[in-house]
Amino acid sequence: MEHNIYIYIFVAAAVSCLIRVLPLTMIRRKIKNPFLRSFLYYVPYVTLAVMTFPAIISAPQFPLAGIAALVIGIAAAWRGVNMVGIAVLCCVVVFLCETAAVYLG
Image (cartoon, rainbow, N blue to C red):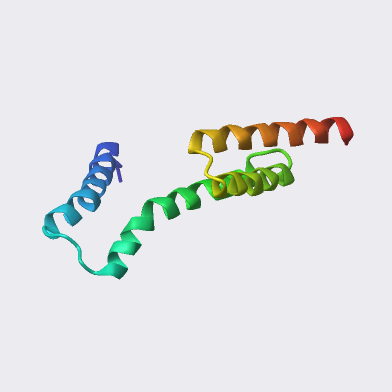
């Protein structure tokens, strides 16, 4: 049986398009349900957290460096630091922790 890669690409594109277009065509008026509005408000944040959290722990050579960066990043976000500042701060924390671990251990 021969597999045609173009069929796979077409099906993936069609499914991706339907997932994005279908809600826009089905929901034409403003959503008034407070629970649904709250749910939709937090979807981007949860999606970002789910995609980045495993990488925060597993990307550094030493997982404790990632955990330290996560804790410091949460504290910085709590204090109102912007996203770019948090990213830079977390990168610096991981760099310093891994550098210290190499020199000390």
